[in-house]
Length: 524
Image (spheres, rainbow, N blue to C red):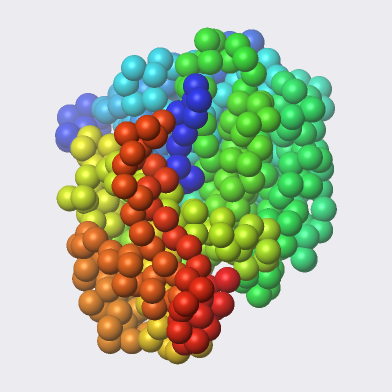
């Protein structure tokens, strides 16, 4: 998930409750989502396959991939009923915020529930940012599927079907595929929750083939002179061209952008729109920002960041992430620096490589990353951020993953270029790792650093220990001199509007040695 911006400018034993009661062939969970009722809620009906006595708990997501905040969507469930094959209601009990226990699960045929959208929630406790939330508005409906549809713990690999019941014929944006009967066919619950849906009559739409990728944009904007699907596609095209050129091939066959922008009065009606940002998925991403021209550059960088998540974590991730636990935060994984920090750096560096931004802009980008990182606690290394982002204190430090993480990637790039004599930087190592593993072969969470050293140089062990496992400060003057760049720290004059920023200066060194100047060219 791309960093969130703040806008204004910016079991206990449940067997005592039920007496368990035998199993079957059809494995498909068949959902219908009814959006025609006027109760401002998602009305869900589910026809289950044959359940066993082990399938007695139906849960809603407490956490979701890529979302680094507690969600607890079970708090929005208003009605939850379960019916047997004879049509009679079965006994259920809510046993926690997110879970319902079903007595006699072997008899279940249908589950019916109503769940509120998160856009109407208060932001006093654990607000859900709108790009990760669910919303039913007069202009559009956003279905982040992990916020509407629940699961049985041991059946998350079962296939799913989804039918939408809608008013009229609105546009529907999603990366999911439909069959000839207008039913979405989905491989598993993991695939389902990786596939948001944006619905609305007033959505604008645009599409194009970009270097072999079928790209679609669905957008709601209260002011299409600022943001429309066509203008967004035109802005995104050079970024996506840069991405495929950086990778060297089209990594996915299709990609869908789902965007919903807020108007002037939306924050008053829905306080969650105090927040904005984006959330990545394998073949799509969601975005929410104010419909204001000042956010056009921010959206462009958001698009670059979210699209590059097709590399990591989609094609490069640890075994700790492979089978996501929707009930607990993913704090066992050590490699948030890779998924978010490296992706943040790559999403900018690829634009430098394609000539979309200048090398001077890249140097200024690095200086900003230093300044912003200094606003966070130096006690948190990148691996500590991975382990502790879900704690109250750790979450305050979370956004540093985009500052320190990106900065560390930039310094690792320089180190690799030095050690290889300019032959191999971080891009080349990154793509080698993706080729080695790919989306179906997760790396070992505990030994990945060893693998990284084996694939590069022994000196990288020291870099990892100092700058990823620990948070040893970089010697920027020394590191940058080796690649023909002069670094200095501007003294405070007392007259700066924002004295904490723009103090770190990088500039091309005209007196750099030929070796350093040659390495500097490799950075571009």
